[in-house]
Length: 197
Ligand code: SF4
Image 1 (cartoon, rainbow, N blue to C red):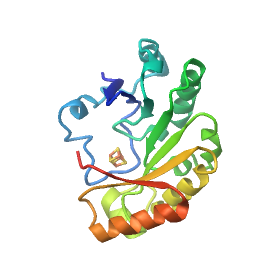
Image 2 (cartoon, helix red, strand yellow):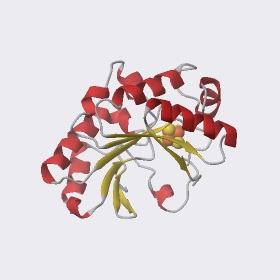
Image 3 (cartoon, rainbow, N blue to C red):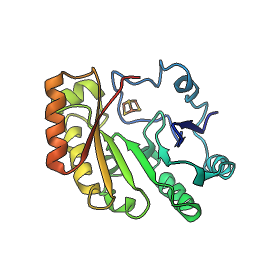
Image 4 (cartoon, protein in one colour):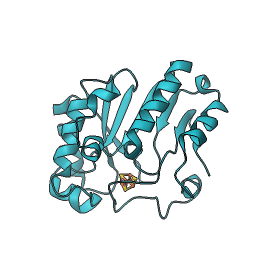
């Protein structure tokens, strides 16, 4: 079971395969190489993950990233506990790659929980409007999910130093990518076009 992996000197933590989206482009089920190995036989316990982190020199990495494949905030309380553990050992920046559903999952405003624990929240906005998002990502929270994702982006930007909105190259038209870029700018967030893996 692969609980951590390294890309470009960043340590990625594979905490869960659960997700509240079913994106058309998700590689959970058909990824190759390292991504195929990220399929978890079972959800790791906190003891499993802490043992894995204790075996690592956390301070040697440029960044520690909660990623998956799966949605880390499906286990938000565990993510935050692990962030506290990491923070006690090192100042290495912490990033969470998320679909932005944390507050929808827990049914409350989760943004303040990230304060002081997370340096960067990278949110997959994936589309420039709610309808396209719904058709592309099939969120379990329904057609208004996109509104919730942008709200979370706005909310969490008050508590963490950096918020980045992302889209996946080739999954929406170029003009939509530019609309996404404008939305990110309006929110005061960074913007990144991710390569389709
Ligand atoms: S949000 Fe990420 S993990 Fe979830 S279905 Fe979409 S691509 Fe896959």
